[in-house]
Length: 111
Image (cartoon, rainbow, N blue to C red; front, side, top):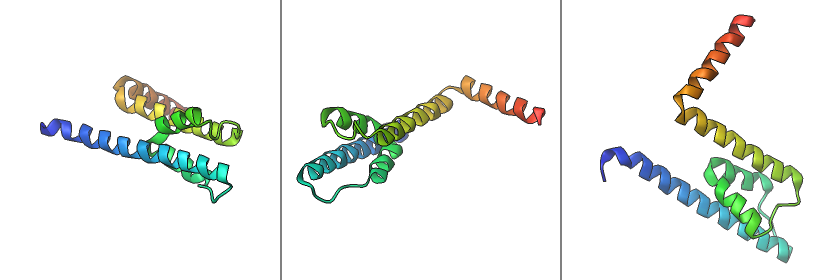
């Protein structure tokens, strides 16, 4: 593998593992909820989503029908997704980044 692809391979492996773990945690929590056992905290599920597991969290939410009714949780998960999309757009598109900095400079000049 060329050295230039190594960071992408590491990122892909990281995201694969985080998503596998996130889905597993959602499935385990769903199973425990049915059995009335000890649960995984919502903050823990959201944390794993925030560190890269949002695709798995949304898939688990739909397939397992888990955490779909609890609106604070669903809203928080959707907010994490929007923040992640915004970060990716800012990082991936230099034009967007330049526009944001222009906006920051304009706001500074106003104050």
